[in-house]
Every structure is written in C-alpha cells, then in structure tokens.
Image (cartoon, rainbow over all chains, first blue to last red; front, top):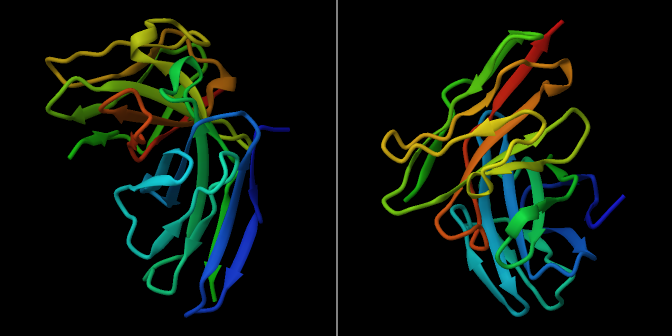
Length: 114
Length: 110
C-alpha cells in the first residue's frame, strides 16, 4: 500500500491541546497539501507546500500550522486556536505541476475533540 | 475567489441508464478542471482532467467555458460506478491547491 501515509487513523484530543497529524510520502513528490473534510462540505484547503522550507496558506489556515523540513514529510498541527477542529483531515502530494497523475491522497486522519 | 458547485448531493440511476453529474464553476481566468472519485473504502483518486480529453472507465467530461460547466457523463452506468464524485478546479495546473466542490454521491441500482 502506498506512497503516502497518514497517521494516526483516529485521534482524540482534549479541548485546549495542540495535536500534530503526520503525513509522509515516498513518491518523490515536490508538492504536498492538507485538506479538511466536513460532512456535506467537500474538501477545503488548509495549507500547501510546493518545495521544502516553504509553504502557503490555503482557504482555511486559521488555527493550523505546518512545517516542511523534509521533502517526504508535511506535518499539520491543529492548535487550540482552531475553533472547530473535529473533522476528517486528508493529506495529498503531487509533482509540480501535478501532471497526468494528479494528486495522490492519503487515507486520512479523523480528529475528534473530546 | 474561485468556486465549484455540484448541485446534486445524491444521484441514483439504474444500471444501464445514462449518467450525468453536474459541475459548474466560477473563475475569471482559464482554469483547469478535474474529476476525482472515491470508491467505498478506497482513497480519493483522479478520474480525469479536462486537458487530457480522454475517456476513463467510460466517463467523459467536456469543459464548456460559455456555460462555465464541466459535467461528467457516461452513456451506460455500471454498478461499480457507485462512488463519491468530486469536481475540482485549479487556476494554474494544480500545484497551488485545488478547489473542490461538495461532491455528488452516485448510486447505481441493479
């Protein structure tokens, strides 16, 4: 199975705590992306990175932070400032530009705030 | 800002019937349009891109700039087409992120 791995699959967090979601790819993709998926809302872009040590805010970046220290890794931190963190989070990667194969998606992490 | 609208949350058709999943977009420039699909218990994956102008699994989609639409069509639905379908837009090839619609759940009845 492969290419892009998200962990953990399920994550529970207490209110007021920061939590970090992992995303790792071994596809030699340049670009990586984080999306949030809520029921009936489709996917909304949180952050993306086209190259190591650089990243850009997406449509809903508030309350989130990312880093891109290695080409293979793009962790997402959900901070206590995120008002509604309970959601399904999807990571994706692609070449730049994505080309024929488009994005490769991970299997997702479901975050629940308790 | 760009927007993608998929007006149908759920579409149910019988096997062998034609299928059309609607997608409309708003963007002032010339975007690239995509269809992504998620089958049950599988990851989201690319189905087709408008610039490829190809048919994948019997599906086609034509970009209509006048109507700002990118509807997905298949002449004869098969049960294995049942899935969640997302239309997506990129202003510049996709490397700066895609804007997705809310998705249409397609159910093919036997």
